[in-house]
Length: 342
Image (cartoon, rainbow, N blue to C red; front, side):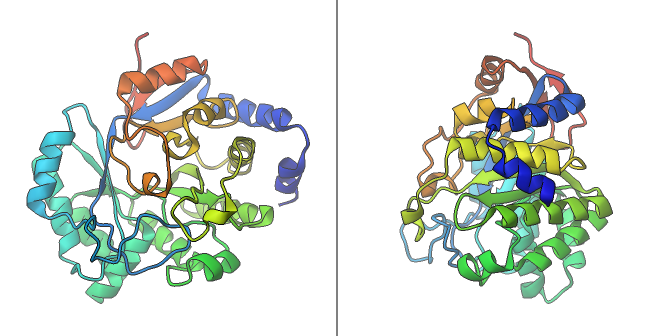
């Protein structure tokens, strides 16, 4: 914690960035990875009213979404060209959906595109499924694996602080249960990522507590692939008055993440939330991955995100080159790494 406080308080951001860059280059050299992926936000109806969310709907709005199998098949055929490797599947906590909906959703994807790696469902969604199925989380994970689940994203962690949980997302999974559910996913042999939503009401110490919790769990399980600092987008949320944090804060947070989480292999500069320019700079402040092509992302854009809805693989490779790094296309688990030709 003391080291983290020093890094956050140090007046020379570039010095902190240089330390993080040295750690990054010791692991990954000059390469920055990306993936050809697509997002599938299967529903935006949600029972929770998290203060930082502009994505949720009550269910009676005209733009409420609940994707059914025929729609998913059509979407896969229309929007998922052959080179796409991964589908990122997340949605709201929709009280109308039975447990059977979720394995059926995965089975539909698997049947239509068996080549896709399905990275699906946050710990919040898995916990909800366990409740409606009246079964342990371990049973839920096994049912989803049989239907095609291959890994899980890291969303829903927000900031692992009881104070922030009470103020901003009190109805949702508390920090200790997010960590416990993640532990069970890792025990089942699935990798996950870990996120941290920052730039709202959290303190520096709460950011560091969050990183420490991730670091401790990683020591125990080794199941985290990426750590992803996510910039809070306040537009269209009850916290709009707070405004958005600065690019300098984002760069420092990414740098501290790399230095504090030396047991997590990859640090992502998620261009959708950071913005393209900060995501490029972040590659010199500890980040080694820039995410992917995405195409259609709703959670950030509903909260005022102004980045493109998607980028081509060639555009991502160009962004990485412009930042002075070497673009390498990857798969979800980093088992296939393909350098991009200039």
